[in-house]
Length: 161
Image (cartoon, rainbow, N blue to C red; front, top):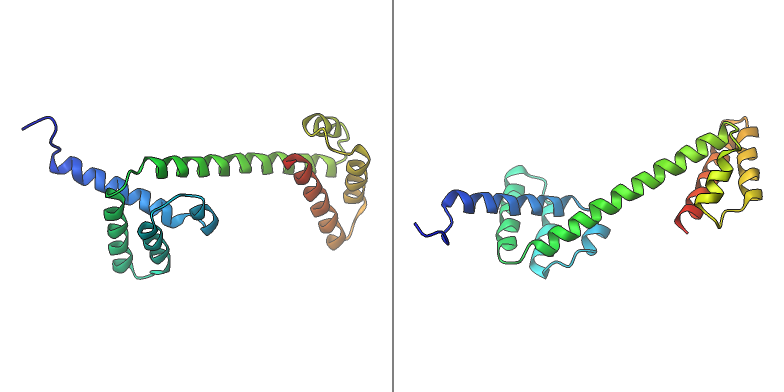
């Protein structure tokens, strides 16, 4: 057998890998899917797969997506999927950091304001102090929730800019 030829097992494994990429595409949100440059037929097949709820029909649709994937170069799609996952991970880290800042400010740790100002130079010290004070002073659950949300929104705004 020539080295250029692939065995049936290799071909089947490649097909399964492409189907898994197709499954990842189906799991993406509409916004994320729109950011990936897909051929029209593949894009339509992925959108159709989202609508299918019956197991066997969905399995066949996933096989069809795998078939379409074999006709194109999957490298750009894989790169886009990696970028999306990396971006989601970075967002999660940012949200966690913002939540930590908010919790520290709620507990009265004013030293954290220096860290926030060093990390986000466009932060206004006076506004941070005011929002933190409002969060600490509000006793009612609705007021406390609103004050905490306002503080979080401001922290997110300055972190993103």
